[in-house]
Amino acid sequence: MFSRARRISIPLAGVLLATGWIGATAAGAGATGPTDVISKQAAASQQEATEFWTPAKMKAATDVTDGLDMSVRGLKAANSTPDGPPGSVPPIGEEKTKTIKSKQLNLPNTVGRVFFTLPGANPDDPKSWKFCSGSSVQSKYRNLVATSAHCVYDTVHNTFYDNWVFIPSYWDGDQAWEGKAPYGIYAAKTFNAHDDFVVKEDYDFDYAFVNVYSGIKIKWEKIDGQWRPTVKNVGRLGDNVGGQGFTWNRSTKATVFSFGYPAGAHPDGDKPFSGRTMKWCYGKTAPMPEAPKYNLQEHVGFKCSFTAGASGGPFIYNYKSASRTGYLYGVNSVAWDTDGNDRYDHISTPYFNSDTYKVYKAAANLWTK
Image (cartoon, rainbow, N blue to C red):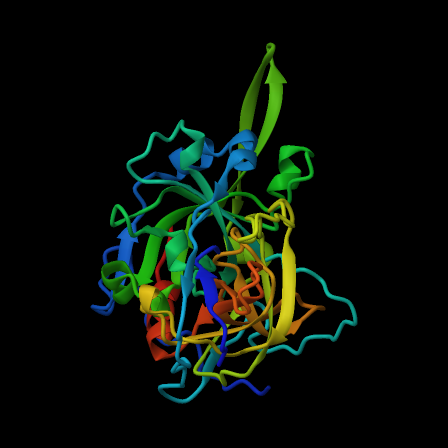
């Protein structure tokens, strides 16, 4: 596809066919899913994870894959093709309704930042404070976040990350804590990923779905000369911000939006993004080349200059600004420098096929207390 040497990194980081409700019976906490779906309970409790992330720690967090970079020559065209008929699950609130068109782009409330700490590291060490992006997605119990697998699982230590939380519509304008987390903080309960990423580190499966507890809002007040937190339960994620629909086995040439919180530098050192506010890209996807180092053969991508920190943010198909929803088509996984000028110019996602739906389906029916 391209004749010049390429540099890639892991920085990050239409009529839809109705399928009926998510397609599986409800599963309790102890239920077992398909053998190639890895489901793991978060090590930190809801209270531990939520109380860990103070505004100062969030501001100091860096993207999980900062500095990863490589050059690759002689890449072949990728092999992204449907493995069955296309399908979809509608966004929350739009199961039987039609959306109103809007001429302006309204950013989705479902998208936010993911924060976590590196396993095996001192949690008080700022070097262990990391972040990615993610999005609320449709699920039976309205408790599901979609992100990249490399934003939940550490392939170095072969374990899931600690103190994992999701903050939808996060923005950091040096304002009050409520501004940083307007809809609350949602701690991980259960991580769900494909066995091929967890065991084989195969980035064709670089996606994950995380069941989260109900949200918590924290308000800091000065009492008797000391700052103390007041905690309030704000309910389920999907009830508060909605959730994107989900689609799979769609055309590899689809018009999509991508959203995320890029923050890292380009290979040339330029750092155009801060990660403090949500950014977006828009374009038409196409199959990307192979990347043998990451066993990557089935990615689709489009032109976008996102850098590290946008990992896990959604590719959204058929996005409607009026409702701020569409259909999750992929997640930000890999940033590419396709012309060798040390500037990222494409982003890609694993192609969402029946394997992806299998992981999503298992996660979308898990209950969280």
